[in-house]
Amino acid sequence: MRLDGRKVWKAVFHEGKEFAMRAVVQRVSRAEVRVDQKTVGKIGKGILVLLGIGQDDGDQDLQWLADKVMNLRIFEDENDKMNLSVLDVGGQVLVVSQFTLYGDCRKGKRPSYSSAAAPQDAEKLYEDFVSFIEEKYGIKVETGVFQAMMEVELVNDGPVTLLLDSKKTF
Image 1 (cartoon, rainbow, N blue to C red):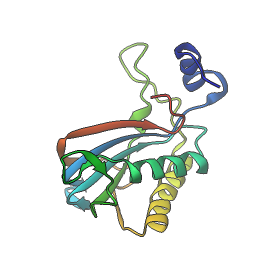
Image 2 (image 1 turned 120 degrees about the horizontal axis):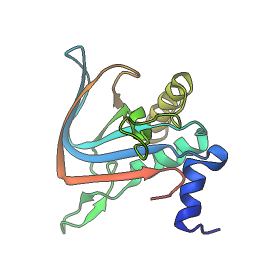
Image 3 (image 1 turned 180 degrees about the vertical axis):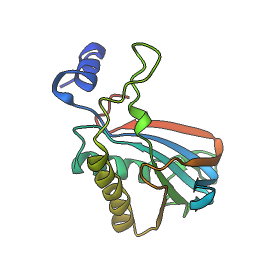
Image 4 (image 1 turned 60 degrees about the horizontal axis):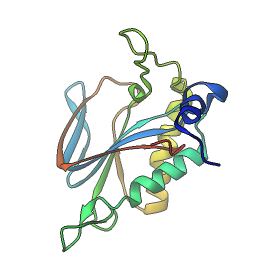
């Protein structure tokens, strides 16, 4: 069933609490995350995934999103065409929890985070997302620290930055 823009907006943000797991995916030449000035995750060439988890997200959302992220063809092949995935180029992956992806700025000047998952639910899905990638694709995923104040440093390669969500609204 295809929804027009207004119906999608209502489905995603209001009626039925159908919030989508969200990700900002950046192709990087390197990325690092620090907590209290200590490096907790670091990668070279690969992808940085900022992951936001909504109230109604579950295993189906995380599996779809993880598969999508890992198979995105955003690296150049020998003809300089973006035809290769992070797996194809032997790249690395850094996943950082980012509840602020659920910041609703439509009203007022301070974002509302009411559609973000509760911390205990989000942490489990965040950990499951990382585990799913490690187990299915056989790679080590670097991470930030859930709910910590983090410094994320990256060199965006391209730049290539994509927005994804598990309900496929954009």
